[in-house]
Length: 567
Image 1 (cartoon, rainbow, N blue to C red):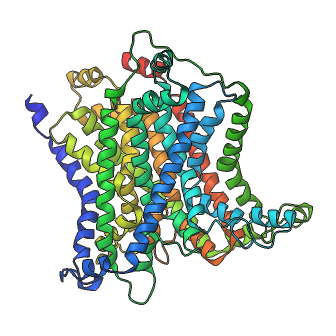
Image 2: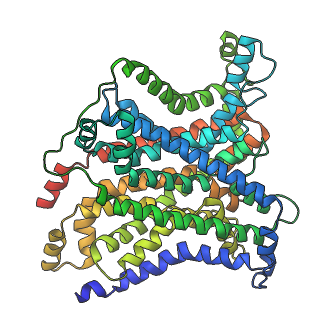
C-alpha cells in the first residue's frame, strides 16, 4: 500500500517537466492579462480586462463565435450519427467507404481543406461557381463560401470524422433486442429511435458534441481562410488581429480574452472525460445472448449508398483534386480541353525557387523530426509512470499531460508568447519546438500508454529478479516490445508538427517560417497556384507518414502481443 501512496523521484521529475510545459504558459497568459504590456511585464493592471470586456465589438464576435461553434458541431455530429447508423446497423454496400471517411480526411490539414473550398466556392472565380454561371447563364455566383454558412459547412465536414470515431463503436455495441422489444409493444421506428436508441447512446452523442465544441472553438484555419474575406470574425481570428495587426498590438487584452476561452475549453474537456468515463453505465452488450442484427434498407439501399459515395468524394477526393489541378493551370479555370492544354509546372518551379518556401519546408521537416523524437522520448517515460509505476503522483502526471489537450492553439500561443518574449529563444525554432511538444504531448502519450497496458508486469518482475535495474529493464525488455507503438506515436506527432498552424502564426517570425504559415501567406496574397503546389507537398509527406504508421500498426496484433508476453 505504501508503494501506491508514495511518489518516486523519477515521477516527481516528470511532473515538474510536464508542469513547465503545460502549466507555465497558462500562468504566463494569466500574468500577461494583468500586465501593462510586453515591455512592462509585472506592472499589474485591470485595464486590459476592462478594455477587452467593454469593447462594443465583443458582443458581435461572441455571437458569431457561438453560431459558428454550435452550427458546426450540430452538423458534424448529426452527419456522423447517420453515417454510424448506416455503417453498423444496415446492409448498405461497400462499407469500407465509411472507414475512408473516418481516416483519410485526417491526412488533409485543415488549412488546405479550407483553401480547397475557397477555390471551389469563392464568389469571384470559384470553380463550381464559374461552371454554374457559364452553364446556366447566371449573372452572379450562386454560392459564397466566404460566409457563416460556408464556415459551418467546411468546419462540420472537418469535424465529422472525429464524431464518427466516437459514435460508431457505441452504435456497433448497441443491443438491438432493446429496439425489437420496443417494436413488439407497438412503438414505431421514430418513437423507438427517440425513446430507446438515442437515450442509450446519449453518453457517446454528448461526448461527440462536447469534443466538437472544443475543436471548433479552437479552430483557426477555417475562420481565417473563409471568414476573414467575408468579414465574419470569431474569437480565434479576433484574438489574432489583436496581436498581429496595427502599430500597437494589445497583447494584454488578447490574454484577458484568452483566459475566458481557455477556461471554457478546460471545463468542456473535464465534461468530456466524465462522459467517456461513465459510459459503462449505458453498456447494453453483455455475455448473455447478445447478437448483432442488420437492418435491410430495401429500395433505399442504393440511393443511400450513392449519397455516401458522394460525401466520400466531397470530403476525400475533391479537396486534393482541386489543389492538384490548381497547381498546374495558369489561373482559375473551369476544367476543359483548353485548361488541360495550358497546364505546366510553372507554379511548382516558382514555389521551390522561392527561398522562403524552401526555408519553411526545411523548418517544418526539422520540427517534425526533432520535435517528434523529443516528444516520443518524453511520452515514453510519462506513459510508463502513469500505467506501470502505481505511484501517488501518477494521477497528477496524467492530468497535467492531458491538460494541453484542451488548449485552443491561438490562446496558448499567446501564453507562450508572453513566456518567451523576454528570453533569447523568442522568435526562434526552439520556441516553436517547445510549443509543439507541450501542445501535442497527449498524442504521444495515449498510444504509448495503450501499448504499456499490453505488457504483462511479470516480464519486468523477472528482469528485476535476475538483477537488472529499472533502466536496464526498460532498455532490454520494455522498449523492444514497444517498438510498433513508439513508431506509431512518432509518426503521429511528426504529422501533427508538420501541419501545425495555430501556434505557428503566433510564434513564428521572419526566419522561423513553417509550411503552414507560408501557405497561409500565399492564400492572403491570392497566389493559389504556388499555394496548391506547396500544399500538395505537405499532403504527400503527411500521407506517407500515415501510411507507414498503418503498416507498422498492422504488425501489432493481439497474437503477436500474446507471444511477446510468453517470451
